[in-house]
Image 1 (tube, rainbow, N blue to C red):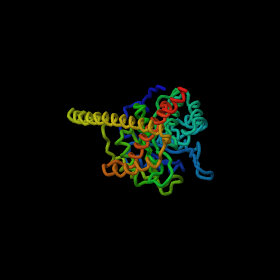
Image 2: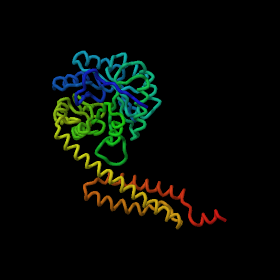
Image 3: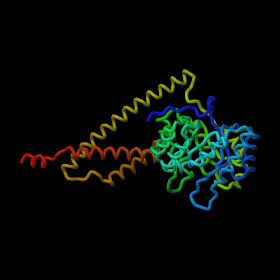
Image 4: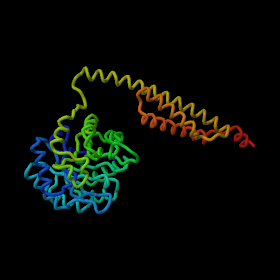
Length: 371
């Protein structure tokens, strides 16, 4: 589906676009005090965020103050001049948020994962000219993310951006939600005009690495960050561990190194161009080598079939993978890359051999055909 996105904001976008505010709107005092501290810290805020309705994993958890909190956001806008934003998950949320003149709406990860919910929100928003941000689904499924974007776009809303908040995973990790940068990068490759915001709070789930992840997002040319700030984060009613004070947030933003997508220096561009030409030549060599490797896989497949040997031999691949990881690490290649690369090569080799098995007849089969 071809999509032409419009800018989220009418003015030229600076980097980073800053979205800040508490995870949840808890009390009027908390919402106003957080906004006041952001203002007094001198931090420019493009949108002040606060969760009005909070989807929780289990019942009896704090699920937000509800529509009452929208009046507090209106006071933030009136007193401090911040545009406001909040998450919506159903038709009622959309209705109340629009009625309260919230400036930007976003779809959360638990909503994006459900096409029925996304469609309900798209139908409720039809004909409304509001900027919409769509968080990635909880599970690492690029198709679901794109599907949510398409549903909102088809409703006539073209001021769309996305929020990369990381993906759930099993096992121990330093992140609350593993970034899986490659998924967000692939989305950006397909839709270069799509504004991408990094939700470093939900990726990290802890304060000490918020700056690190925000900087990685800037290095990858993300448009901005969404960071949860709270006047007294240790006392927050939800996600206390990942929230920071407005003063600390100001320091985080000030320390970000913002890099340009391209240079105006002709010599710099020439040097980069020369290096890219070398990469292009190496890529061509790699492709030729892989093609030759697949020819050998074809030959092995034909030989296996003639000798009644199965295609898959797991022990052989495990040995290859083990040795390649050792060799790759010596040459500065990560175990993750080597594993992904060899799994792809292995699968392609299997596919080639399967085709050989389907097409190649053994001498015995030919003789049977003759008789």
